[in-house]
Length: 140
Image (cartoon, one colour):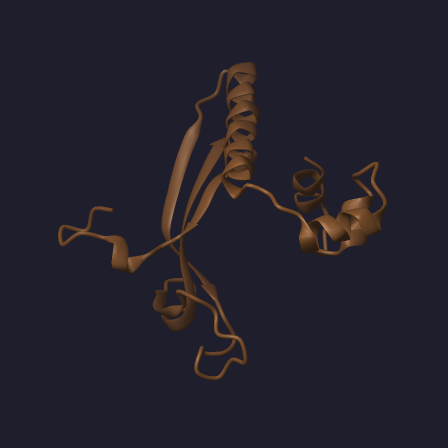
């Protein structure tokens, strides 16, 4: 919960000192956990999904407004160097058409699902799009 609170806070820079502001643990303890600790990514993803649904559904009920589920499957996280030029190549990168830039760029293509009610928009999930895991009819 500490990591989620800090990572979604305004002005979060990805530093351990930022995480320590939201925890009762010392920053060296947090740093050790991030470097050496074991955590289950599925548990974290399920917690994010549950909290997003809880907050947006609560807002929807409180304001008697509709809840929207937005699925975006063509967002590109552009990388600055091709794998052939990088000292540590990033897995599953490739060339993708960026609608934002109107050209083909190098990076990851992600699928994002966002829950929205009025001015509240929260991430439900973000997953890498894996072109090798689709069937001939385009269904995953």
